[in-house]
Image 1 (cartoon, rainbow, N blue to C red):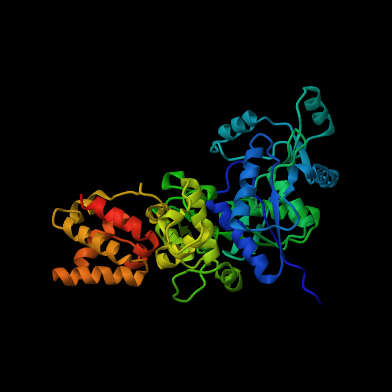
Image 2: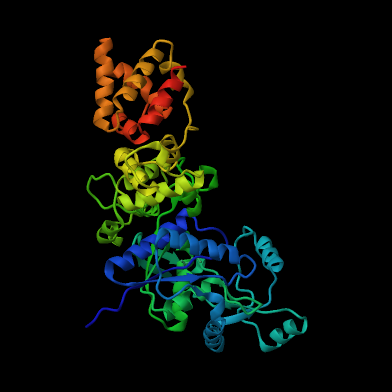
Length: 480
Ligand code: GLU
């Protein structure tokens, strides 16, 4: 017997940007589909016409594309499927499982208040048993019907949640919610069931904010006589202070992270760690392929996950370090383009164009290539004389004592026409020996003179790539 093909979906409402919580839900679905060779569907739940926007829809698509979560069947829009919801609603109307309700929200709230209920108590079943005459009377008043599900009053509704184990609700706690609005549009609670069933979704994996909707959804499956899919509710994401993650904590939209220099693979890696763990004692750094092979729904945790911005930075730095040279080159070229930095043959260095020069720089940077925000500073002094000089570094290292050392080094490099890293090293050592000082005493101020900072890649390599003539100029300038 062949197993039913596993199919999962991400079903965002286009009412805002793609935030971390939504992206994490999408990712768990995507990883699961990739892991088991199943299908992943993107469905846009836009039946709330007042709150849905085209802008949000586009932002969700951009976010998904940036994260590299490809979906199979094209983004499906619920607003294109109104006929389908109507057809199924009509069936339920015929059997009385959907009934018309003419109450206004004020009337419902008034009755709840009179009965001493809290105002969010919800609907009280007032229109459940309307007669044909009552219906005509309401219609004659010009009232419009919304259609509610006649939910069971006794017993319980339960399911075995993939993440949270058995969840059970008393049926009396589930109110007859609206399935079809007066404008004929289905509500989320109706459309979600129709779509999940008709699209063959086998596992509904979504945020735990939907746990309280699930019993109602199960009642809709039952009303239609449909088999239920499996459900798994992902734990909530908290901010560092233990409260639900929100804008107060910092960036929450996927695109904000992109702007902050986070790589898509790093974001995907970090999102995967929110509520899931591969087990073992690793540092949590995984390439996409590893995530897919290691992912398991069994290891999704039911307790809330805290978003740790520092850990994300760490994961990002590890992904940056591991990038292929060609990808590092692309990122570096983008920085150069933004700053208008080009290659000049006048520098007299052993490179023949910008890409070739950048490749040499990237090699020399090695593991320092770990923070895109610092990349402009790390590249600037290779291209321009207008690089940042850190004040503290200058004050400590470019003094009246170090000035003659730098001059001497400039003279030596000029005299020897030092060019390669080895020749630069030899020049520094020769000057140090001559003055009977340690090479470090010259290297520190030279580094500040050439790069503006006290931390840089290996000094001899940097000198070689900046090139003799520019090194000499900078040393002399700094000594003044
Ligand atoms: N459209 C719902 C939301 O954005 C998700 C529904 C679901 O996954 O079932 O919260």
